[in-house]
Length: 235
Image (cartoon, rainbow, N blue to C red; front, side, top):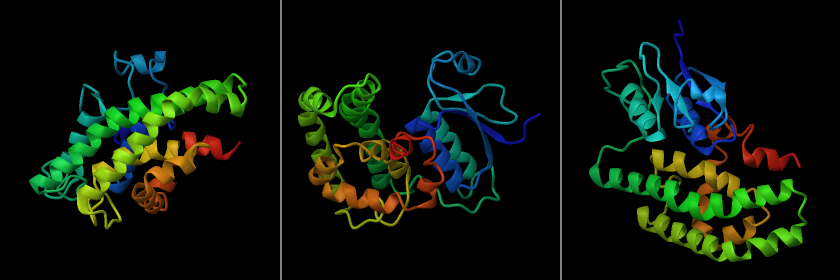
């Protein structure tokens, strides 16, 4: 019988990386079971084809959907929890109501605007064109119509970061690392690895400052292998 958590996902997956960073933050031992979205291997854990999935010893049903896994991790590894009262790690969910609203705001816009406008608008189309051998000139030309929206999205993120805490850093909520940072960082790492990165940095200078701090953390370094950013660094 397995006594450790098992996380089913892919290193390239931003949501899998979010959960991996959270487990590392809480020093929770786990095994990573590699499975691609909608793969036959994944079907034994979830019919919906989405990663990650968390398998918890003693639970008959897997935890599916990242927000459900987030809820479990908060309960299991935060201080004063009933599930693991011996833990000493700091919760990724702030205790005060206004900060909770801010964290949920960032998770929501990451799952919506960042993915819709930036990951599906820029990262995935660029990767598809590169895989087909398109020239850089052709790729940039075809991405032009998406770049206007992408840059507006970056500018909006930059404004939102300023309003979150007048951004005095180092994290989105100031001194406290939260789920907001863990959800936003993985897609930003993919985006800042692209040839368009300079345009993104110019559109969102405060977001870039936040990113530069976070990428130096062990949480980021230890989960870098296998990501889009890692793969692009090898080219």
